[in-house]
Amino acid sequence: MSRTTLSERGDARMADDGGQHTGATDGLRRALPWVALAVAAGAGALLAVGAFLGLYVRPTSDDWCALWKARDMGVLGITADFYQTQNGRVTNAFLTGLLYSDGMRGPKLLPALLVVALVTGLFLLGRVALRSLRDASRPEPSGLPARPPALPLVAASVLLSALLFFAGTRSYQVLLWAPATISHTLPSVIGLWAVLGAVRAARSGLRWARTAAVGSALLIGAVLGMLSEPFTLVAGLFAVTVGVLCLPRLGWTRDRYVSTWCAAACLGLVGGLTLLYTSPGARWRRAQNPQEPMSAAQIGETFHDWWRLWQTIGGQWAYLGALAVGALLGLALAATGTRADGRTPTVTGARGDGPTATAASARGDGSTATVPRRDSSGSGLPSRALFRVAVLLPLPLIALAALAVVLGLRSGYGDVGWTYGRTWTSFLLPLLIVLCAYGAWGGHLLGRRLVAPGRTAGRAAALVAAGTVAVGSAAALVQPVYALTTETVVRAVAWDRQNARIRQEVAAGSRDVAYEPLLIGGLTEPLFASTYKRDWAAQCTATYYGVDRIHRP
Image (cartoon, helix red, strand yellow):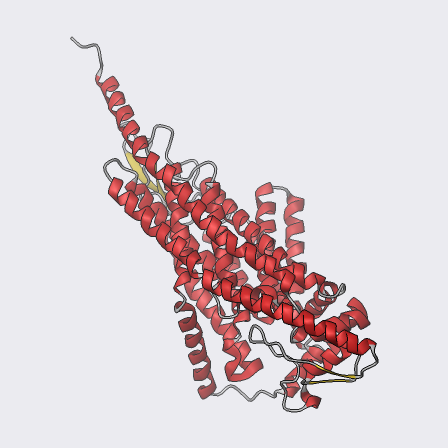
């Protein structure tokens, strides 16, 4: 008679099933890094080209004014000038003075700085988000690995950055033109790192770190409020929403740290925007274009502009790459998040990703009972209703933020304001992050169903589909980057030749020099106004070269 007990047979079957499960996921684990590497390499090469193109940036449009003002007025002088006579953007003016204090060296290095800061920030944000989700689900298994897979995270960070810089309608302005990157790209990067600092302080558990983070939120909010009106609207909307959702009484958090941090950020944003709006420069600017009271027809036109904006964004299929690279990340999490015995933890609700988890009950029969992942202290995951709100809310919130930006652009620039693609960065970055998160969630749900033995074809199909879209998204950006490279380099060569000639003429004593406009990025060049008196770009160019006037050849 066999001495093997029923319990031992059960253990043997479990071990055998675990081996089959582990073998079933080996292929997915081996293939995923190579797909992620292809995505990261392709998008990373595009970003490297964009950063390198900074060396070929030459003055155009607002650059001419910034150059001579930073040279002649200094940092504090240009800051006072912006506040008194331009637009009231004190932070913008201060950063402009610093950036142009050494001529064009700062604007040439800024694109590389933005690329590195954004990619690094997105990577750290993804890593801390995954670790927070894993910790929030304890003590029950979450299906998330102890260490988030680095290569898929890198691929996601790099591709999202490439999409932000190159998939839009104004790539040159978003990445290479310093006046626009200071006003509209840099605020998003600063906001991203501010959030990372707040999360770091929260995870440290140190009271002084949290106090410092709240104080920093107030200061950074004020700085950003005086830097960019569109970003202030978007950031304020998100901060208010997150602050309300994270009130302890709703069960998501156990204390008021998040809500306090968001309140401090909002207070800073409002204070900075108020200082900007009431400045003499902002009042002068509004006086140049008096605004009539908003009528029903204007409201309808604003919604029409908003709809055309989303049609333009929706027409760029490359943005689907954010979903696809998120799905790759989710598949990687599912493949690496299994337990050592090869079995995925059994979780009810959304099969491991919902707000409820299976926990063994206290009954002696060993059966399981579904319990909500929310205790009396408010720790852990939120209730099912709040979880659904958090999942469904981001996209409508982003749509509302875009509407606020369009409304502001229309009031400042008229019916063509919505076409200023450089301002879209404020809500495009949150959109890309949310799309990636949705993709990761869906990929994780799908991956946990496909890791079971016998689903080799399903795993291969999911990996091929997500990988193809992600790689194709990066490939779709090659042509815009190629066009941007050609346009930027050709203009730089022509500009250098013309600059050398003008300086020779000025050295010879000429007071009226010829200047051939060199258009790039849809920006204003000198000598395109109806009269010279109204041609601010020509006047700034003449002041920069130290002459009385410039004219066409």
